Amino acid sequence: MSIAKLYGESFLELAHEEGISDIILSDLSDIAALFKKHPEYVKILDSPRIDKDELMKILNDDFFGKINHYTLNFLKLLCEKHIVHHLAECLEAYEDLYNKYNNIKTVNITTARPLGDDLVKRLIEKLEARTGGKIVMKKRIDESCIGGIIIEMDGKRIDSSVKSELLNIRQALIN
View 1 (cartoon, rainbow, N blue to C red):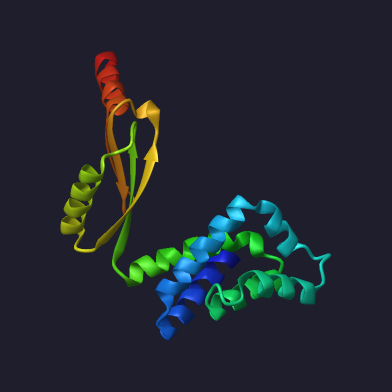
View 2: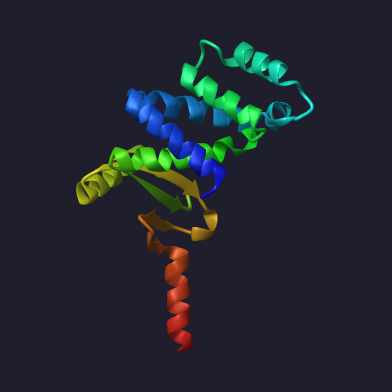
């Protein structure tokens, strides 16, 4: 098990026991987005050249009162270990276990163009009825699909893209 996965899962266990797993998920998601937008900030927080007390002051100045104190302490722990750059992986492990606890399925949808809100809503309703759980949809645009849709959930893939259909026709003609 990777360090990030161990930290993420351990943090979820604590958050779940405290009844604040939703708050922590939101905090971690916001911080991961901030770190992605400002990679130089992560380099500062990960730097072994900066004194530990100075790093803690930076974190307190930037986050105290803005995020849950458990999240702030988690960031401090990552800083002390110089593994802040693994926060996105910690978030992924946290979110995976959070979704299992809350019967949430992540569905990856790939289309050539953005789906309309009405179509997204109907698709989510059908998938929730089929799975009996809540659906979180992650949408991706890939113009090479040409048209149609690719749905990935629980390790299964339904590919009804135009590109895939054309490849199937081509393969049938060759054989």
